[in-house]
Length: 286
Image (tube, rainbow, N blue to C red):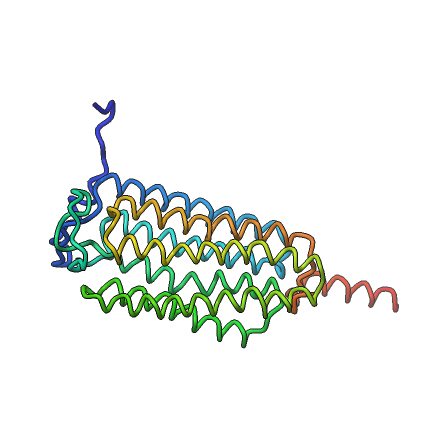
């Protein structure tokens, strides 16, 4: 018995009738509660990353702002899923006897793939810029990252065994990303200095490991229908928290004492400081 009545009625207000979809295997109020918790957590760190950035000089906020916008996008996504929106029902390939995953159709949150489509390039931007990589290199790896995301989305929306073909395409793109992070990008970071290599490598290695777990999560959730949508909320949420909050914190701490000019990121000049310096030089000349 609850002392205070439960107030989360999202799955009842936004039910199957919202978009005409139907799902036998779907989140309960517990799953919605989990998504609300992740939403609040991401929203909090959006503010903290922005605040952290404001404590730095204006031209040295790039990494903080990228982390903040990544968390903001995730917060919006989790708000959507907590509200029981941004999903469609797909007939499952594997019918299970466990009552948590028994049924013909499963709730597939396409909203999370939209989040990853937007946030994965931002995560890669932080890693690439931390290693002093060029915009051209970032653009190329972003295209591969989109393949990594979109192929899993397409696979999740397919009911037949052909979904696993898209899963394979996703894995190929993942291994290409990891190869770039561990070899080309790491080599470039090492050439810039041992401190830059250290600041880059552990966050990049951890991020690679976490991205490996996303296809595993897909396999037991959207792909294989092994775990319930409520458990899916926990699994994906933990991975997102590590990717979007923990790893950027590690990267920002590692870069704290590194001059961004060494990374090829010239800080924006402060016009007030320039004006004061100019006036000072004029006074000296006089």
